[in-house]
Amino acid sequence: MNPAENSILEKPEPFRSILLHIKAVIEDTIPEAQLVYKWRMPCFYLHGKQMFCYLHQSKDYVDLGFWNAAHFTKHTKHLVSENRKRIKSLRYKTLQEIDETILREVLTEAYSVKDKKFYS
Image (tube, rainbow, N blue to C red; front, top):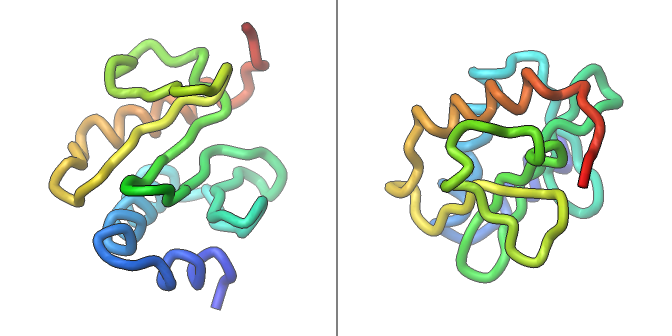
C-alpha cells in the first residue's frame, strides 16, 4: 500500500473519514493528481513533479493546503492563511463541514493556476 494511504488510514476518527473523503473528491475532480508521501504527509502531485496540494491533520482539524493560493479568486473567505505567508488551506473539523461544491471549485481553480509562480 502507498505510504500516503497508510498515513491517512492510521489517523483517528473523525480525521480519517475527512481525509478519505477529500482524497476521493480530489481524485474524482483532478484525475491526473497522484497521491505521494512527502514531508511526512500525503501530497498530491501533477505529472510526478509539480506539487498540487497537501493533506495534513493537526490538532483538531484537517487542512487541505495549496501552494499557489495567492492566485485564487473564488471562495477566498473559506481559505485559512493563519501564520503562513503564501499557503492557504481549506480547514475541516468534521465531515459535515465539507461543502463539496466549494471543495470542487477550489480544486478546479487550483488546477487552473497550477503553472503560475509565487508572488507576495
